Length: 237
Image 1: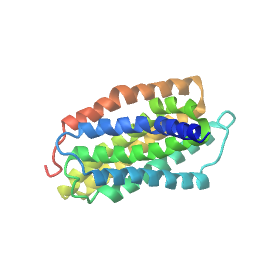
Image 2 (image 1 turned 30 degrees about the horizontal axis):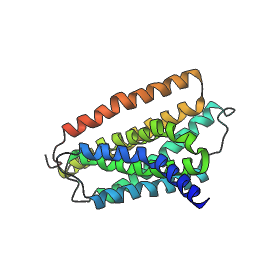
Image 3 (image 1 turned 60 degrees about the vertical axis):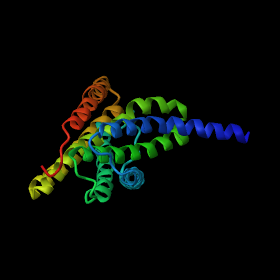
């Protein structure tokens, strides 16, 4: 019985974490000019876990528990917006806290790497909760194909503008720094809100939009990440 329980825990753990590990490795390999310190990357993954816990507390206090099958459109949209704001702002808080002043942040694509590592740390913690406490292996595959790449995508857009903000900071452009930081968070919140809302509304139109969002993630966002890696340059330029 003990062996069986250990095996089940191991299987659930692998199901929850393997897609996260795969995407972390994928992004890490794209950072070809100069690899980031492992200590910093682990700190960013931990920051994602802290962000998930902080967001869960905020959502417990401020987000209304609703039945999406009977709730009004306004209630669903409000919930989706609040969740998007809490989760992406918390990710950004720990992203900036752990990486902004780090001397390793010397290339634009570093911003993408850092933001994705925070987002996937968040996704890993969230995925463990879903697999172990809610749906078991039945939720592992859909989350591996949908939710985890979605979190990576939200982080990618935050990271693109985070890297640009660092370039502006090095150039002494305070307005550009603030504008890029704000834009990155705004895009992450927007995409997160659209993703959650289309899942919760469950109409024919929302399902179509959700499918388009998934296609956007797989055919554009991944390509955009690769392009950002190819176009990488020093933040001093």
